Amino acid sequence: MSRPVKNLLIACYLNLLMLSPAMAADTLSFSQTMVPQAPPGAQVMAGFMQIANNSAQDIDIISVSSPQFESVEMHLSKDVDGVARMLPQQKLSIKAGQQLILKPGSYHLMLIKPLKALSDGDTVELNFSLSNEQSQTLQVSVSKNRGASRGMRCGAGKCGGGKCGSN
Ligand SMILES: [Cu+2]
Image (cartoon, rainbow, N blue to C red):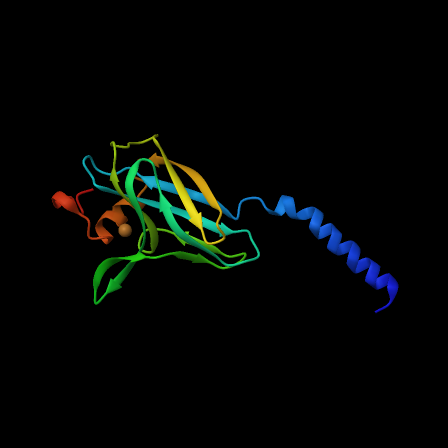
């Protein structure tokens, strides 16, 4: 390898080193976040969002928690033999530079047993633990029915009180 090329490579490498603190910013970025308001007395709420992995490595979300809920699970809605089921996921994997969409009928967060009732305009705090040992916090506002919640309630087989299809 000629010396000029080698020097150039070293210069590039040093540049990368200097850039790395900026790149150490959040591993995941969140957009289109939504927690639809649930009917009074509901014991579960859902969280939808787009999650982009900004890092150069594959990332798993290994757990999610919220100070406002007893627990948070990661679910995948799926048709199993014609029946809509929600399958708990041990993790949500997002490949380097890719994104994962959490939406009704697919992957979503299941917010279980709110410690107090949450309605339109309240904020839900979600804490994500990642496979790279980082954790990230996200604030999502609870929003009134935007259509998605209806599909969720019925599609998920959670239509308590004969409410399914009535709205
Ligand atoms: Cu679910």
